[in-house]
Every structure is written in structure tokens, then in C-alpha cells.
Length: 155
Image (cartoon, rainbow, N blue to C red; front, side):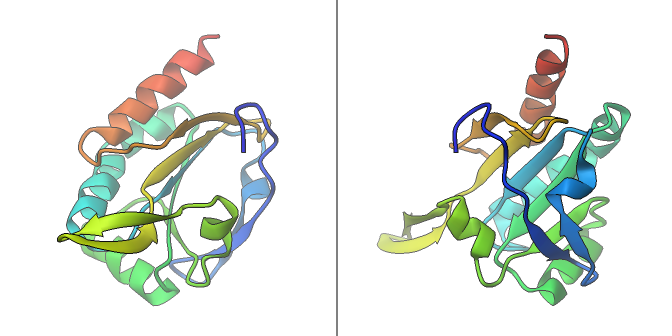
């Protein structure tokens, strides 16, 4: 997927088992942040960063969606534990994760394993891709995303 491409619709279940589609948010900017696993250190830092900045995203009319290969039940537990105010989408079959080609080799404690690469996609109100953050550092990421979206809105 390239910048300015129309983002293909998808439908996944949120933490409550309700279906959520990208087209539900037509007319609003959307932040899709993919993370490897719920309730792990880096994913918790990143998710809580979006939680802490959520009011700023809301004021700008920006939708925030977290996506991982966790089950609906695991997403619910993660959302409740950290009081996350946005939907977490479950992709246990990795349908969307594979479509976005996010399974990559990673070094875990000296072993090479395959895992979901932490990546964030910014989608414009017209559902075209604005930006891809590929080398995401969990600390400060939400503010980085917000700054880019604010700059883009001024164009």
C-alpha cells in the first residue's frame, strides 16, 4: 500500500464482539495502530499513550483503533485493565495483519522469530492513506501521530 492509495475496507470484531468496518468512519481521519500482543510491555506503553492523548484526538475528530492478533476476549481484558477509551480490534486469524504484510522476522532474546511488526497507518477522511509509521517506538508515539495529523490538516 502506498501513500494516497484508497484503503480497502475491512471488518473485524472489537473487544465486545461487535463488527467494526473502516467504512463506518468515512469522513473522519482514522489512526490504525497494529501492535504485537495485548498486555505486553511495549504494547501497553503504546496503547496507554493513545489513551492519554485520546481527548486531543477526539477534539480533532480523529478515530483511534488498535489492532492485534489477540482474541476478542484478550482485547476486552486489555482494554478494561488499562481503561483504554478506543476500540481494540481482534485479528486472531491475522487476515488484516497478513493483508498489510506485517508479519516480520524479529529478534527475541537472541532467537529469530516471526511476529507482528508494530506499525501505524494514518487514513484520511476520504479513506486514502496519508502516512505509514514503520519503525514505531512505543514511547511518545501517540503525540508523534497527533502532530503529523495536525500538520496534514493545515495543508
